[in-house]
Image 1 (tube, rainbow, N blue to C red):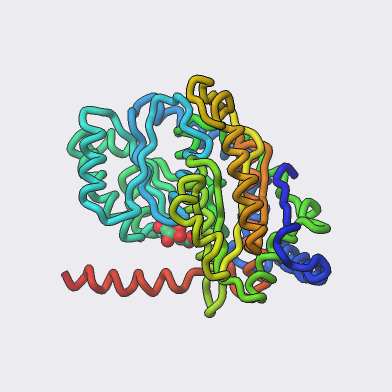
Image 2: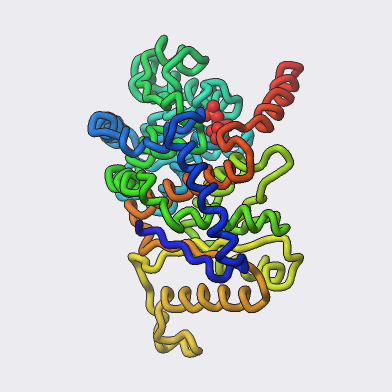
Length: 411
Ligand code: PA5
């Protein structure tokens, strides 16, 4: 496994972690046994076969050939994974820019997209597992009308991709009626675990990132044998942190392009664990920017949190600070300085008694990011099961939707 975990500064005694390993293996066994609903993602990397990859690549090729922009409409698990991966790995020169919408109710946001796509060719990718989410479907109504006015019904259908469950729902029925291309969200995979399905893979492929490398990384780790021994200690440590009174996990990155990966982690952990009055509140920070705003709290604030550093050992690019700049940084590279910041922050916080964990990959390559995604999904699900909650439902989200829909109907 290329993801490595360092827990020496967690402040949790090793024998305690060891004493929970059997329980963690039992939880892992439940994920693999198929006895729980929505565990299709566990074996997913094996199910991503040549046929499904080729189908996604074909769609991505067509979109790149006929569109300057792909507008992806989705919210929560129906967009966060794709956006996280595209930002982290960087859009390749595919010629088609991927824009995300349908995750807010901002008229200004919609209008700014209209300004950006003026006179350009576009395709739409509407993603909703339930096929009925208000944010997504209201935005779809707006952009579909724009497409119908611009292209007419037949061409709009050719440029529209619906990703949903293959069974009757508002979006699926419309897609069948109008003849959009439909790609499946498997019935046994929930939104926040769906990044390695067409939900994430189509937008990622359009951005020019190699989805074969990404899924290969996940497939390499999708084997229960890879999680034997101490490989679930991160999940166990999180739960021990909670039992010792910690209530917040701060995911920390030293790469601005990883910030949205932090958003994806927040959803994954927050929606999987925050229920029945339990759960660590996940948050994320991007350094060194946030050291100048939140660094004070981390160093000396209320000890309700622990830190999880998510790091890449190497980067593809570097820049030299010229000798002429003077100062201690002259003649050093940005990456050398960043490494000094990483090590310095870690040391300062550990010295102050803040529990710190480190999760590291060699670099943020497509393969390693695929592995990292599968790593966090597994650790998150095991951690939730250890705390006694169902990682795969989100009853609280349904509650707000019902209230909001009642308000909209009353307008
Ligand atoms: O993880 C989840 O299940 C949620 O975040 C959903 O992805 C989100 O609510 C969007 O739902 P849908 O895909 O049905 O539009």
